[in-house]
Image (cartoon, rainbow, N blue to C red; front, top):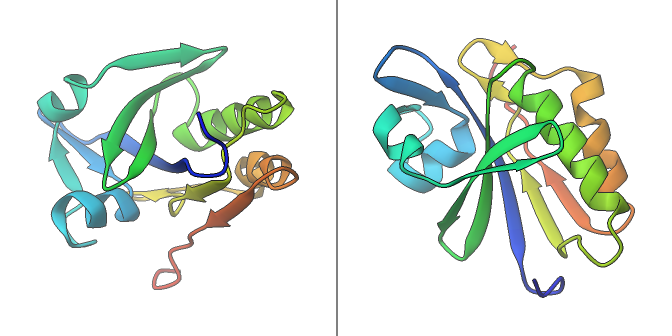
Length: 138
């Protein structure tokens, strides 16, 4: 991975029904062109290859010149998993990309808290990290 060129996006999803998943607003914008349509068919996500690194399980999506790491709820929240993953990535010498975009930590009614953003702070020591927030909702 060329750390100067590669861009990584971090997004989140959670099961809504048996057939559909709720996705974070930034991923919805990339896939569907709108942040209002935040559900996707489960079969589309399950067709993606699943990776596991430590306690974090995620799927990789290549979309619009960006590698997207998609975290799904499991025993821990997707936000906490991404924080741990970013901390591990920041400790890997030469393994962190130049730019990381973290989508709004909101999926449906679930929101991330301050501790979920700790991994973003750790990764920002070696990389440019942009964390998007959902400012339209309280």
